[in-house]
Length: 372
Image 1 (cartoon, helix red, strand yellow):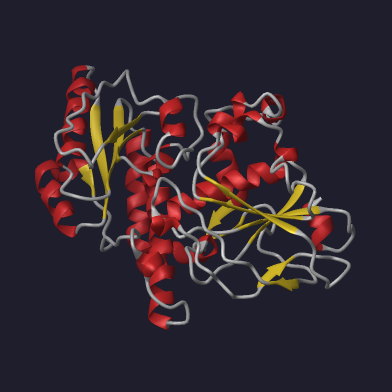
Image 2: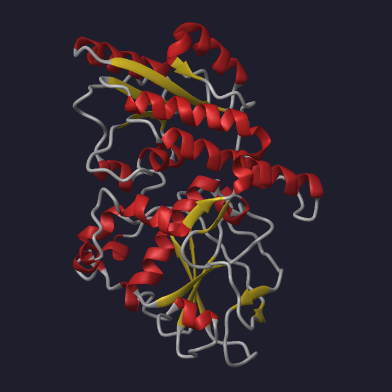
């Protein structure tokens, strides 16, 4: 259906144009993939709107199986100002972007009715027939959703779509990873800045994975010094070693001092990528979209993020700062059971117990914070 629409072979399609949100790249990735699922379940052609003011997935990823960036015979529709607020986080508002929006149309250059849909977590999304929401605009040719949250895991509780998802060979445990890889392929530029470092890090991770009785733990520290994350790690290591297993670590952080501190503590057991750590937390607030420095910063941050997501996804166990990025990375490689342990950085007195047989439930991960 999608390819026929792009070639102009059919004019009867409905379209979903996914809009980015002023939020982190990981949240935008989760929203982007969830909106693709919605388009798939509602028989709509799926296109990603390219915005130069907000995180650009396409800087680091290219279409893997079909061209969700393609535009055939586009028309221009000016987007009205859209306000999207989740839990009073005003920084998530989409800006009043007056840049002309390119919208697919195959037979006319006239504007068509379109509907905006802004989603936070909505039980309706899990209960209703996605082909009939929103009730006041689902029949329009163009549907423009805005989401920075994941809705995939819980979709198997939707009575209208769970059997369809299963018929496609998907499960709760695999839907996110399968859709991610179906949509996205890292660009060659992801490792261009440090090709040797990328190859060495990947080789070290794969060697650890193939070594018998070895557990590979990824530690993602978003903010702070990592004390609570490694407190959890040390509990897990004690239990794994009691079973006669060796442990290898890989660290994902934007703080070079934290890298050095834990390299000194764990020595050769810690795989420490050779590249200089960089943060992606604030890059999407990097000033005017026409500023060349700002654009370069966005591109570098997206490329670094894609690299780190891939390298860390190779691990068996993920100890993460409570965030969408960590949850997404931990669930990226499809498998029957995930071992993800979240640490709450907003509560300095929080010292969680970490048991190798009791990872965080995917139900809680998929309905809290950025979802899945």
